Image 1 (cartoon, rainbow, N blue to C red):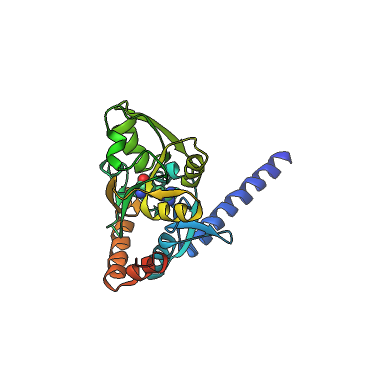
Image 2: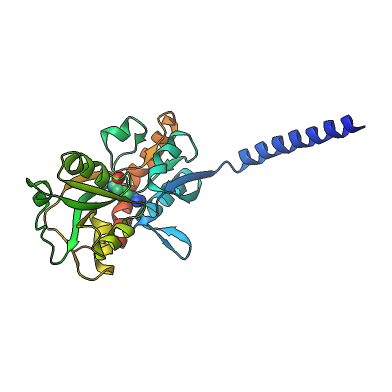
Length: 254
Ligand code: ARG
């Protein structure tokens, strides 16, 4: 008797699993994007929802492809691993295309450009980006962990013995450390930098730029089918002005 119960239970589990599979197939119309919503105006939280340029562009792409878009908000350094393992279908996070990342994932065509900027206190001794690399420099530099700001500053400054890099989980936390005098500057993308400076007193962005970069969506290497569809949809949205319109909605022309 006991055995029969077990068999029945197993059958039930198997049936449920099968049913689960089927229903998943029926509404297999969900596509999952991962992002790190600490990066206004590309992605940030509003009323418990991820909003911003990337969310809007992703939604437009999903609409075109007939998918329902689901957005997962995770740490920046788990975006690429999550895409690689297939946990997420793609990632959009103001993510810069780099050679190193291209070894791990594929990138869509680029849809925006970014600049690595330097935020300092208004009365800072750091006047230009070059001051960070000057002989004898020894600044404490804040970055968001695993971003290109982190990668560049680690290579150019920390490894060169010209200062130390403090890595924060959120760009906003790096800015807070700057405001409270724990670090000397923050290296971060220009658009979030503008938002952070507007929201905090006594800060400014240096006129000189650290680096120029291209933003694109990351997709698993194996998933060339999605890459193709994604790129086609994105290309159409760039061509018909939708992408520019979305960016313009969040970044008013100066
Ligand atoms: N562009 C930089 C990079 O790719 C920073 C991106 C940070 N994005 C974010 N959603 N926190 O490394």
